[in-house]
Image 1 (tube, rainbow, N blue to C red):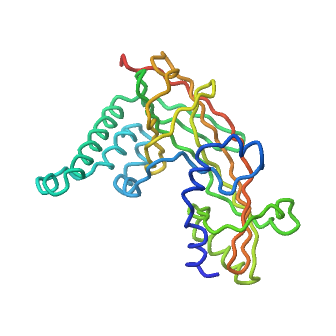
Image 2 (image 1 turned 45 degrees about the vertical axis):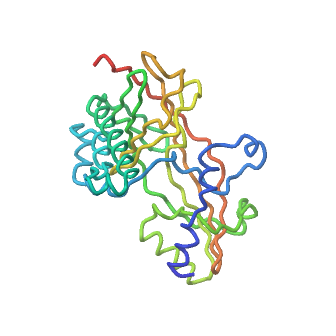
Image 3 (image 1 turned 180 degrees about the vertical axis):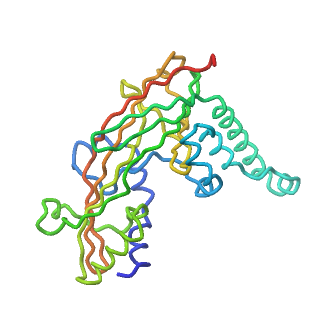
Length: 291
């Protein structure tokens, strides 16, 4: 299995699996105790250019609070302003760009007026989640957080004698490897080339799929993006009624340690992903509409 084939096998993930992983299915939860594809992150719009545009600012922003992650992300999302040619030849595209930029203007307003007071929580495994800024005015909510954790670890303890080996299923579309270092990837490839098969476990820490209120009411789905270590979240469909008009919100993040059990043999890829419950972490968000 060469690099191109491995990348193809692991990265062409079916959107149906993403949708299934994004929102829990009650009837599925009552049956099998495993997932075909691991729950990764909230369904968010991620723009690679956003990180590149303020790469030199990101670390300084976190250290000093001088730059609003929400504002900078919104600025990086701007679309070209419609010109007369676009208005005449592609009126629908022009309208879309205008509406999009109007939404980004609102994000900038939110970012400029957000609370930059940081809140942090450290888990037993040493992972720290930090809420870097937030905005809540009783009707709108925006959050920016950063999760400090080690890069994914890979160990080679997984094999035919492991209890999960019988639970493997052949997988044609998995994208587990995108966060691995080149060294980790090359080490896997070297072991595969040497013996024709290799088993390993990838462990990584991430935030679960949803942010909820303290009573487990879901806030989401979210739109937003990743920006040089930050994740920015804005509820896509507005806030649920129980989250509107409050003096404060108690929001719960769930930090999860994901495990991917992978077996490569020849040109076949097999995997198993146990369900992860996650550790709840609560942050208090104050209504700052009076600020």
